[in-house]
Image 1 (cartoon, rainbow over the protein chains, first blue to last red):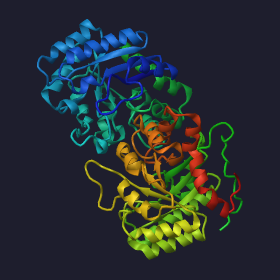
Image 2 (image 1 turned 180 degrees about the horizontal axis):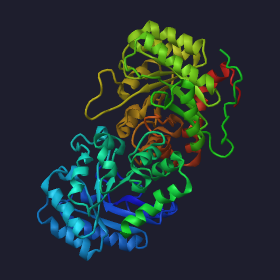
Image 3 (image 1 turned 135 degrees about the vertical axis):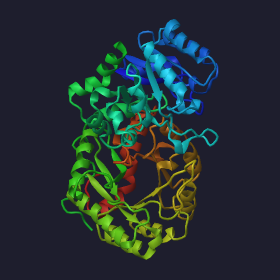
Length: 255
Length: 280
């Protein structure tokens, strides 16, 4: 099983079971995860992103070399963010990066995002875009961050056909209502950590094809079992379940 | 009223293999299907898939947040039809509106005292600390019917009639012998658990929020597993994400069993037996 959405280090507002890398790896192994794409909670708020990504690469190598795949954070509102991108790609050999546009203060129509998308396409990096991290209604009163409006992506991807995006933690059903074109836009994939409603993943697969859905748990911020039980609840046949749990992600990272 | 052909309290196709799972918080509202019976059929399909033995069903369609007496009756009639179709898999909680107190008490009598329902569902028409809630709580207590009160603590502000756990604590303080289920534990559970901690007759309910790690562990630590009840808020939420909170929690197995079903069954056993259900 490949989990495309796990995160290392400390969530700023709460200690979590699994917020030490060794504990996280043990938790993932216990749940039969063979590969996990890992970002860092530090990438959300830290300004010294270079050291965040250096630590992420090191933690993945030391604790989960055969399992954890690092996805460095890029904040395109920081000075010289292009160097962070270069380091992730050339020095740490990361297959992709993770973005937090809501926490970093830009919308997807911002020219800097267009530029970033172009550079990642040139470098053939996968871009993971975290649409949100938690329910807007329960955020810390001094840290209220609305979710990213991903409906703009459909148009953006027309001019950047080489880009490969994975949208994490999105209310995908709502996003598709806002932008039906997103269902068939470019190389866009979705995890279902925040997809809700009974049988929600199966309903989504009818709208955007199961090939575009990836297993992402948002562990350890979320209980891992939530995503796993969603697969069971949706009642997929074996072939679709394999695609969802492993094959889609493997194909994406190999491309 | 005795339920005809009443099933065992532990009846479920998977009861022998899995722990008892009873879901205190399920609605007909957004279930696909033209009739209550169709919708119940759809619910059971997923209950089987997830190993859930029984749901407590409330609220019909279209859902009204401040329903008139006629609308209350219509929504409760839909629930009555659904539970009559599958009494082995669903019990009913009567939807009441404290803004129409007389009509609500009449509706309680129709659906619970003289009907098959076993609990009360209160949503967001009036904050539950209001004195109009007292006669409803007293009437429910006479039948030992469960009371499920919706609560939230939204950082961006609650709706005018929407209760918080503070309201539940105030109401529970006036009725210290009556158990009250604090729906969603306020959503912002780190606050909700602390708010209800000292009110021993208030139960934390897990439904309807993101499956954020730590919720169940904190609730067990601060309240004890005996005061926690699993619920989903399906079909708006998935059974999966809400069950995941309990299944993924690092808690002792006996605590997990209490939360998944035993606490709710214990709470409801007197009224279920009074209505003729068999079982433990």
